[in-house]
Length: 99
Image (cartoon, rainbow, N blue to C red):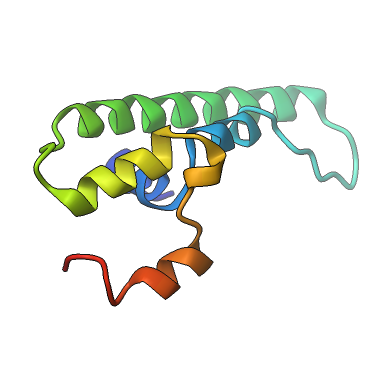
């Protein structure tokens, strides 16, 4: 799997904090039920997800408030879902965002 740091940066730049609700709810695809295996994988996924969001918090704490692009992404991630910069919106804004 991608590193915790890579995933933390991904969630900051490509999701909104409300998307975390989906990360916390496992989806099971099965051919035959194996409760023990599912629980083990769900525990591992939960730990991975918690580490990602903890790292995201640490990265956000280090952001410079004077960087407008980073402030925009932080607002997109932490703000109301209406302020989320989806990939579609980002593609329309890429020419006006600071490099």
